[in-house]
Length: 523
Image (cartoon, rainbow, N blue to C red; front, side, top):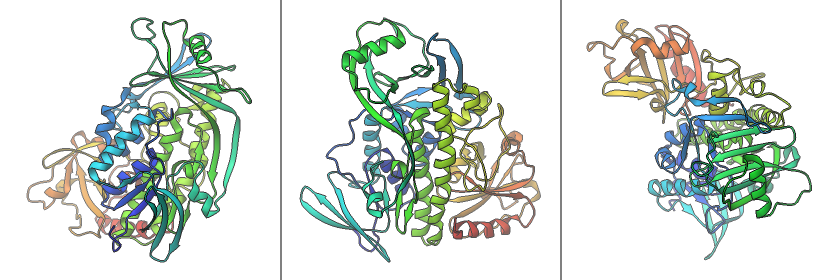
């Protein structure tokens, strides 16, 4: 291992650890993932990947293999359990103008992890180390020294930073003495994977992701690539059902069907707990190590991926010398409120809707675009003071605001179409939404990590000097969606909007200064 350029150490080879590692690799950061187990997880765990996570996987060049192993879904159904009558559906097609992936996918975690591990092995051979259990670590001025148990004995590894993706019982969090605040529900959730024919022999026209709400006992039905998954509440003190009881429970919900085979099951405790600190010098908490949020509405794994989207680019900027250590403090400053106020609020709404203490419209948005944005893109807004919500309460798109994820709109470069998320994959990008015919003064040279381009419905004239820094926006799709007139918009590498200001001939210089503030800021 190169001690002059030590890797970032990721502790935990679950989905968050693997996706975080892929993010670091995509930014050119050396990484090693240490997993204590001899094999990846075989447990029956998370099973739905939301649109926002698909976008992150695409940015990290890992989406194709995941889609190939998944089942795609364009409808999230809400039904009344007692009657089986639909109480409304979230149609992801409402986001066709917002994202290249207007759908969610179902894939069980034990099938997702090998796919991610294969992608990581292809892109960073040997970076996943199985049977490496972290025993202890020590921080010092220039990095972190880790001691790990392996089949061959104890090994010592030097790392620039350590990312704790080691789950809700995080060893690293415990060693750091970081507490978690919140509560645990008395009610547990039972998850069971079953093989049964609901297509031909016993046809049921349920959506591939269906939530059956009920005051007495709700149920979630998920169509996985190779089975059906049932999730339902298990009362306090009740024992785990037997296989026969699980089959009877399934028939209670979906009616009498032919043969049912139980593939696997899991009982898990439901928490709403958040770590009081997410960073100690060069060590960071991500995913369940930082926040344990109910997996209802797929908030568990997918909110962890929000952490894996926010931190890798910051580490890359610091390691490249483009930013100081202060940039890393912005990770906790932004993500902790997402867990406490954003995911927490959504989790409470999810439970209330399933228990029929709250109707689905109140618990989501206002139908159409708002529901789809809330439930699949999570409506996250970062670095915002005061109150905010993941819930989008309008049926049609709203004007773009600072802190939000930018819509992944299509523009055209010199050689063809490109999307906004592709423009900012490994760079801050300033979009000058103004008339290219007027030769806007876009700086030819920017600080490292920043690009500035013009986006216009008027293609840049060949004598403008802007051909390699201009993108054609036919019909002013981008400008119309932003709803802000002539502006300059600064995008971060995680596709969130860092700054917006009215466009002037000085905007190029203003953006350079704003970029310097962003990468220096304390968070």
